[in-house]
Image 1 (cartoon, rainbow, N blue to C red):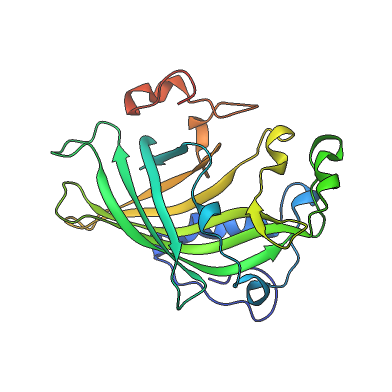
Image 2 (image 1 turned 60 degrees about the horizontal axis):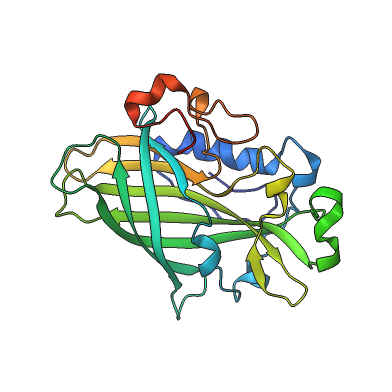
Length: 248
């Protein structure tokens, strides 16, 4: 499966169980619903790999997530991200995961893993928010980072496994040439989201694989779980899957 439409973009190896939703997510990026989110075709990784995206990969708000076809609530917390000194496109990640109602000795599982940056794409046009509020900040560029992640839970803990798939991160290059977390559209777009993870979780013991997606403000492919217009709102039918009636 090839990311993007430009010649020469690298192949991404993914498990068959991840393929359909990962392909669809990437196609949505290549062919966005709104022209303002159209991406330049070239992969600008070579120009941006020297920038450190560590702080941007730590979420600014609580992750919303689910695991399995029944949308059982998944809580993901990323506690630490730092770049591998000898590999500028490799980030080391540590955090914890928790599945609502999951039995076990521990309330959560620790995980460690990596995010490998495989693309950095720029938007064709800049976003300045409501009334061009951010235009005075004179940002130089804006776009999306695409990475491949693999997070392994601690094997000694119950119900442990591995999360893997694709992450997309929105960034902006400020007037000083420093990459910053992109929240420009947070006040003007009902569909604002960032740090979106699309992938699967596979049990170490059984080998069984489940869809597992999470993100800030919204969740990729959340179906009828998300009933919100202006912000995420959980469908009451999934209350027994760990979702409260009010925003988590």
